[in-house]
Length: 498
Image 1: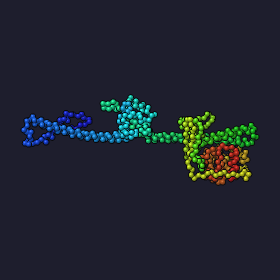
Image 2: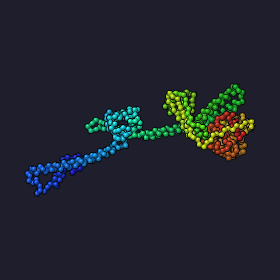
Image 3: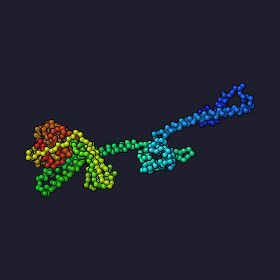
Image 4: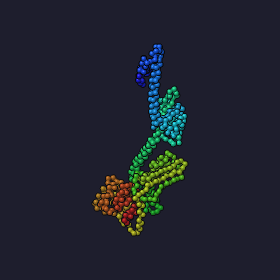
């Protein structure tokens, strides 16, 4: 028997000849001996006819056997097709030209939440998210125009209304003796979309964090320089204010200068808050969830996405700095907390602050009140260590006004040299941010030379480094820059009492 291959044309004449020879061979093999064969008495033409009928019968039996074998192979192929089509982990659809479902596999039916028979004759768009249906029509049109395979993602809806993300691949096809159809495969990519959304959120948070860090670094540098300028203005103005008669033109002038400098100091502290990523200390407070609501008109979605950005404000020029919510958010994150804003146009805005439980901390000690009559102030020798000439000049004026004497050092190395040379000081006022040997490097060396010498750290921002120094060395106190004369006076009086 000849072998039929897909790449070789079938010769039906050759097949018929081979089948005839095989039938002839079988007929002769099973023919009865001549002595016992009743056909031997028949005429020759009758014998030939009987032989021909017998050969034809054998041919039919052989053909039936081949058909049964082919049917078995077809059944096997159909079983494989069932496994590949119906049990595949992807949805298969056949759609008509009008988008009606003609056929679907078991996975497609299970994903859409209907029996397969119930899907047939349903419009495919019934299971597409309403807002994505136009996109489906657009891709179908492009597919009809180009004829190439098209792929796209869209949201689909199950029978129970549950939405999910699906990836579709579609191609035109033609049924035998029928109209053209659309073959569509569908895969559930909901988990992939969730992962992508989470990745986008993380990337957005990272960009925001990096932006805040860059802005904080810039704000910290500007704030330091502004603090020195404001410190000189505020110190000299407050020192002269108390020497003027109340209500006099000079008093009013110094009062305006003082109040303007104090307002500038508030703005500088706002800028410093952007640069501060760690709280200087942790104190236990009786806080649960904190929630603040207003009675305004709410924020749009676009405004809400920018609400925490520094310097973003919807207020008129001069009526807001745009730092309020940004500073609050920075402070909350520094305490490992969370800030949540809920708002929409036409409704009030709700801001919720959540703080973690604080373990191992204790409430701040209550202040000790000491009567000024118990300790009369005396003249102190104050060593001022600051690289800014304006600060040194203003500090000299303040200290002289308060009745103290001063020695000035423009940096850490000069201050250490003065102490090593025998300078006797009652207190040191130390700037933290200086070129060369800064405050953090100067303080341990001062403590090594004079273990009991009290130090006032003058800084605009108490960061973790400053907080660590306060906890590490005794007799360390902080005076926030910029400060008025009365603030410095109280600090020096407290150091003297202690």
